[in-house]
Image 1 (cartoon, rainbow, N blue to C red):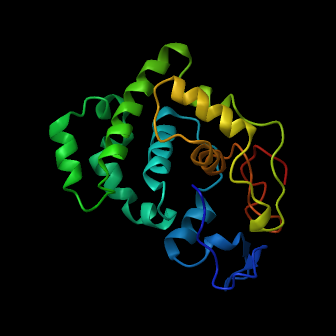
Image 2 (cartoon, rainbow, N blue to C red; image 1 turned 90 degrees about the vertical axis):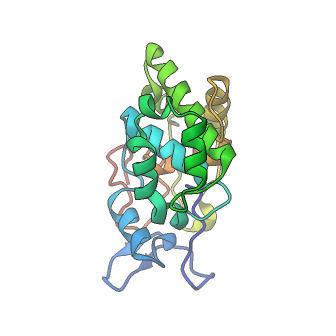
Amino acid sequence: MAETDTVDDPTTDGAVVGDDGVARTPWAYGDPLLLSYYDTEWGMPVRDESGLFERLSLEGFQAGLSWLTILKKRERFREVFAHFDAEAVAQFGEAEIEALLQDPGIIRHRGKIEACIGNAKATLAMRDEGGLADFIWSFQPEETPRPTSLAEVPTTGPESVALSKALKKKGFRFVGPTTMYALMEAIGMVDTHVLGSHRRGTSGVWDS
């Protein structure tokens, strides 16, 4: 997720204390969905195929849009994409694509829909060589950023560039370096909670 949602004050990009007295990264505020997602899910390890396929897919659909837009449509995405069961999505054909293009509950973008289906097929092909989860996590960097503000949070890195190239060679699409860095943030491969946030270090992958 390329986080772009921030608090109203553009000069405040360090940890922000909410009305509940808890400090968070600024983008967590602005909508209850963002707050819940930040407090309970973002940055926590995801290591199963379905979970990673879902997040990889949603990051692709998010390209050019706000993450809040995706969160609002997430349940519908799950419904129409078979809860991101790669085996089921890989069987989607033109009839399913046309139905998805008529569904206002998701992002109606043919290229992204077709990429999701193609990525499901690529995910299945990777099972013989260890699977999608192990492959993605093999690109975990040796260190994580320690940002004190949003301005210090990277949007890409050597590992996300390498992961992007490797996935493209496997047939994946909508997996650019920035999108892959957002994925790495979302699944805990890096910890970009700003220092001072109550979520910093909670993934168990990195020390605070």
